[in-house]
Image 1 (cartoon, one colour):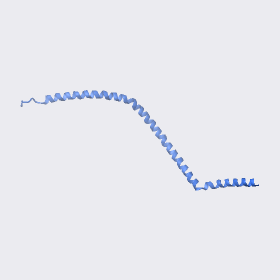
Image 2 (tube, rainbow, N blue to C red):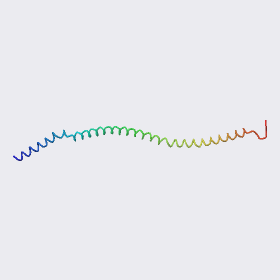
Image 3 (cartoon, rainbow, N blue to C red):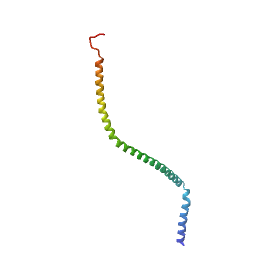
Image 4 (cartoon, rainbow, N blue to C red):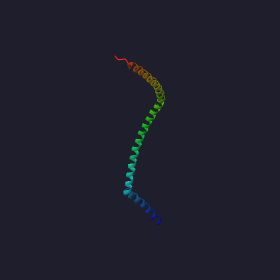
Length: 109
């Protein structure tokens, strides 16, 4: 009979723990924290997905820029030499105009 009593007491103790645990205030606080963390996890996953899509778009834009950049550099260098030539021509024209605009010294009108 002692064995039967021991099993009955063991069963009652587990049943009592099962009934008492849901009313434990620590468990309610822990469950609230778990719920908050799950909510926060969902929000963070959404933000992460948005950031991943934006980074994919930026990556595509950067690839296009890498493809276009060598052409822009070449064009800029060509324009730089042409602008230097144009600047020299303008300076020559200004020098000619200045020499034509100066009246000869000693002559009065």
